[in-house]
Length: 147
Image (spheres, rainbow, N blue to C red):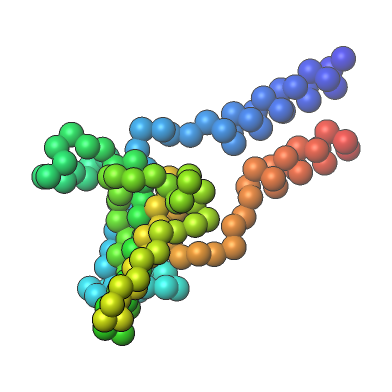
């Protein structure tokens, strides 16, 4: 009986640590590659401070809160530029799937890609291999209980 009770306590702690998050604001990287080349891909976030988007506002959207991060990649006349910022409008990804970005092309060698996300703070970094801390925590919990 004590083993079941301790297992239930561990499961409760596990779910509390992995699923309780701040929900009021998101923090995003805020930079431009035309000002600092480290803002481009691959992204070197060691020199940038992450921005609390709840402190950001736009004069033409009074009262609008930022709920997402955005990464824009654009090529105009052969020159690539990256912009990372808080996002005020739109939805994450395409059809709420953040793995996909909105792409647009135009005449005169113009290409634009907009990626929006809100799954975690700093999600507007470079595309990298995703780690799953929840999976590792679950695996550790299973090993502990089985032992």
